[in-house]
Image (tube, rainbow, N blue to C red; front, top):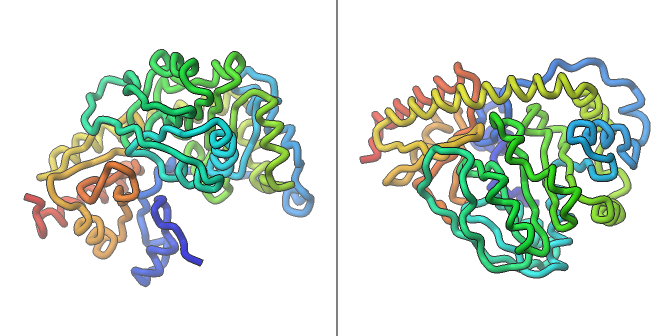
Length: 358
């Protein structure tokens, strides 16, 4: 079975190709917080028993964070599973408008149901004043939004997004990275869900807590829609370990807020530092970003440098050729610890000395 490597985070596949242990790789192709919570012992029942099919406790804890009834929340096997059900609803409404460049998984989800889509080309030049107005979207029945946008890192304003709810039969907003952004919650569409039956917001705990292996995300929408999704999915879509970890991480809204504040400080501090360092590299232009990743461009192909970073330095950066509208002159770099960010900058500088871009 072939594996789609267009998503970042393919450590095992790259390690096999490089003939090295995965532990040797610094993976900046995936945009995860570079540390994880301290784990306490998980009870035996989480391993042995079937998970709670209603996910009631986790839904209650998510609801407490967002001041909603638990019926407005639906945990999923990562955000990817929830995109699949959102796409099924989207196909029933008609053609989807997808931002380009944008996350390829939206198209994957629509193809599951033979759904049609058209691209909304986003400008490839923008300023550093965030939040920003959302570009004029295209014609269609369903609008997909990513806030902050992946891969550009642009943060859209709620004031610009809210009027779009009256223009589309369904609006699907991916807020996977929003809790990692300082003052990002002020731009969230979650407070609008109770008044708009045509709005779905999808979030991921993977990025915020660095737990990609557990696969845990959640959707926020009106109960009737989520009840329909629950009837479509597998009997136990979220495993017991993921449920137990999610319940523990979200047990205290105060601890959740403190964790978010720590992550947001890291995003702002390391993002600004990396912007300055990358801007000093010859031929490299880092684009403004509110998120925990930076999109960089050059006037020449960056593929040879990316491959050299893998081969010579065991560093993985995100190949952007899978993003519609980008090409081989673009790379995305996920922020790391200061030590590893220095490692990335040093390695890029060394490769640019060997093979200048200009």
